[in-house]
Length: 309
Image (tube, rainbow, N blue to C red):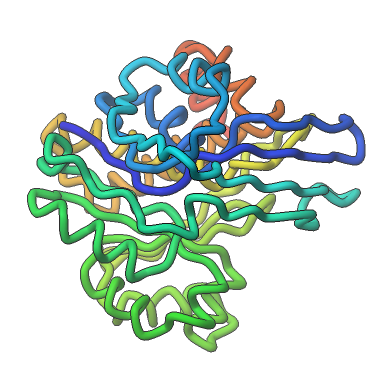
């Protein structure tokens, strides 16, 4: 069954302390998400917008990933594509934003194409919660809906975010945002508070320290995969979400309840592994060369790593 992602397609410039920099490479939440999800299910439907300055070579890179339907990508004449520039600090866990050019993001969000409105699995990548809610309402046949958010919306759109939480199955955010949203420093306590707002599960990301899953039926924690050479962390969270949602769509297609604790636990492990490959290169370079065999081998290694007793 189809998986849909709504978010951004952009052009990035990234500086790193040890691996130099890359200018004008493919970026955006939809881009990383769809590439990661393509290893698990199809079709993956992309809803986003770019300007007429979006280069053909970047479009060709997006099309390397089989099963991704880009017919929902609007190319707006006279508009500019979203651009972001960032510089990672020495520990690679923190970065400085050098510039953000909103371009099409300052305009009306793209509508969900009529052909996409039967999508069963929905991921609302990070944007204003009222925009996320508007997109969600265009997908009445959804079986699973998950959203991402960020500190800006927690500060400026708390009411709309609370409304969104009452309409989705899952929320993904980092541990600082969970504390900011709930006022609770303990990750589990914060996530349980979010469950009271409506979702069935919350995934709290902790960067190099992995993530926590708090579900109405259980709690789990997974470490990050110990990647030896981190080249560019850009898109790690989006590729994590793509792997997770792709795996959940595959579970649902196999007759498993995609909102169940066991399914989400497995899916988060898949997301962790895809993200571990993503950070080994700039942009989508590593995901473009990744094979299913490599993915399966690292997943099996990760499973052995977290098993004990």
